[in-house]
Image (cartoon, rainbow, N blue to C red):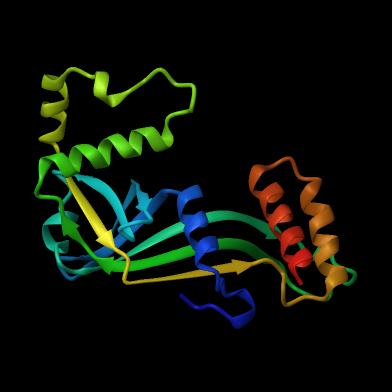
Length: 204
């Protein structure tokens, strides 16, 4: 990923937090000599330093990907930045955003117990804390049938890089103008980018 030095995320804890907060990722590989991508919910196991998930068995991506390097993209909040918010309109629009790229070789989960654990962990991660649903309560016969249609995998993290483009390359006054305007937009992405920009200024 192209990352100008002012946008580089150095802190590993920040990188992992972005991954955990934006777990619906895009998994890229090469399939039949062409780029191929699948949109998947994943979870990060910090202890093993691995990403876990599963493909539909009918998805051809897993068949050619075992042992090969994958690129996994986690996209955080993003927002359009209008030049009309600046002190001068003699400039151009841009886009602020946060993203993390993870690289590693895909390993299929041969042990069914590992796949079950992966599925259960994903469900616990994304179900609301007060949800009565539990995968453990689903009939085992139904679970077994569903598991036949998926292929579990893990991707040990070989490298990880992150980018937070938050107007750091602009003067402080301009950054504050952007924050003020973003806060007036009733959009979750705009609000999150405004909040991240505030935190970034406070850390300086």
